[in-house]
Amino acid sequence: MNIDPNITKYLIKVKISTDGIVEKPDVVGAIFGQTEGLLGDELDLRDLQKSGKIGRIEVDIDSKNGKSEGTVYIPSGVDQVETSILAASLETIDRIGPCKARVDVLEVEDVRAAKRERVIDRAKEILEKMLVNNKSLGEDLVQTVRSKVENSEITSYGEDKLPAGPNLASSESIIIVEGRNDILNLLKYGIKNTIAVEGTNVSKTISELTKQKTATAFLDGDRGGDLILKELLQVADLDFVARPSAGFEVEELTYKQVVKALRDKMPVDQYLITHGMQGELKTLNSKAETATAKGGNGGQAEENRAPRPAPSQRQEGKFQEKIAERRQEAKQEPKKEEGPKGPMKFLEEAAQNKEVRFYDEGWNLVGKLTLNEVIDKFDTVEKKYKRIVTGGIVSQRLLDTAYTNGIKELYGVKQGHINKRPGDMKIITKEFSKN
Picture 1 (spheres, rainbow, N blue to C red):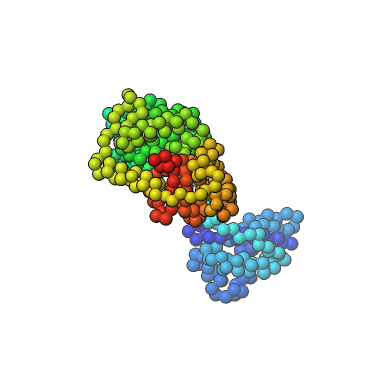
Picture 2 (tube, rainbow, N blue to C red; picture 1 turned 90 degrees about the horizontal axis):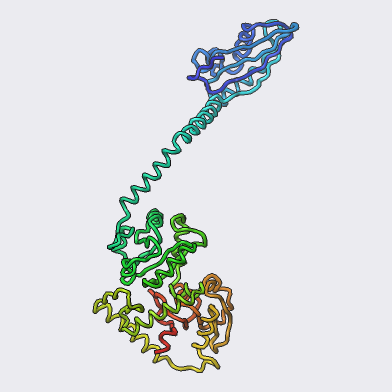
C-alpha cells in the first residue's frame, strides 16, 4: 500500500464483511455514497479527497464460499478529532453493492509515531556502530584534553621544577599533594594553589615554601600517603593535614569528596593526637620548643636543615607583641578556687584520653566526647556546661561551635590557627600557662 507522506498523519484501518460477493469498486462506491451528506460539507469525503486532505482509498478484499471479507485503508491529513469522526462514520455503512455488510474500525494509526519509532531504532543502530568505531578515538580525545590542561595550567616551581598550580606563588596558603595527577584533578575543580612532592624524598623547595605560607598536606588515604606525611613532618612546617577516606586517592576524588576532605582538615598537632602518632607529635613539639627558644623566628630542630629566612621587622614585631599580650593576659587572670584539681590537671587527663570534657561553673563534670566526634555531637551534651577542656588543639571550628553554644572559657593543649576570636571569650592553652 502506497501512502503519500506529504498529506498522511493518520491511517484509518477498517474491516468489512458481506454476505455476498463484492469487488473493490463496490466498496469504494459504498464508502463515498453512504457517507455523503452525513457529516456536512466540511467533512465530505469527496471534497476532502479533492483538496488533498484524504488520500487514495485502498481496498484489500477476498471472497470465499459466497462471502467477502477484507480491509480498507484510508490515509488522513486532517487533525485527530476530524479523523476520529470520519472513522466513526464508516461504521454506518450497512450495504456494499447488492449485499448486506458490516463495517468495523480496527484502529487509527498515528503514522508519525510509527516513523519516530523507526527513527529511534535506526538511530540506536547508528550510535552503537559509532561507539564501537570511535572508542579508541574517544580515548585519544580524553588524553588530548588532559594534555592541553596540563600544558596550559601546570607550572614548574623551584630548582627541582616540581609540578605546581598556576596560583602557587601568589597564594598565602598552599596545598601539598603527592603527584602531578593530583594537581590535574584539583585543577578541574578550580583549586590552583597546589604543589606536588613527587615521591617520599621531600625536596628543599617544599621545606622552604612551607616556612613562608600556610601549608596543608592533602595526601592519599593509603600507606604511601602515611609515609609522605611522616617525611613532611620531619622536613617541613605543616599547618594542616587533610586526608580522604581510607583507600581513596586524591587524583580520583570527585568534587564533593575534595570539598569534604579539605573542609574537614585538622591542625597538624590535633591530627597527630587523634591518629595516635605520639612519636611524630613529640618531634613536632621539640621543634616548636626549639623555635620558641630561638625567639620565635623558626629556628630548626635539626642541624642539617636549611636556615629559616628571617621575617621582616614588622612581622617579627607583631609576632612578639602578640606573644607578650597573651602572656600578660594569662598572668592577669584572677585565680579562682577550682576544686581539688586545677584546669591544667583536667587538661592533662583530657589529652591522655583524647577527649573533650564539659564542666559547669563549679568545675563539675557534665559530659565527655572524643576529639573526633565533638563537633558533630556537641548538641548531645546536657547544656549545664560553662566551660570546656579539650585534649587536642583549640581550632577555629571548635572555638566557633563552643561560642555559639554559650561557652566563654575554653582550655586546650595548644592553639591552632585562629582567624576570628570573640572578644569576650577566654582561651587558655597549656603552652601559655607555663609562662
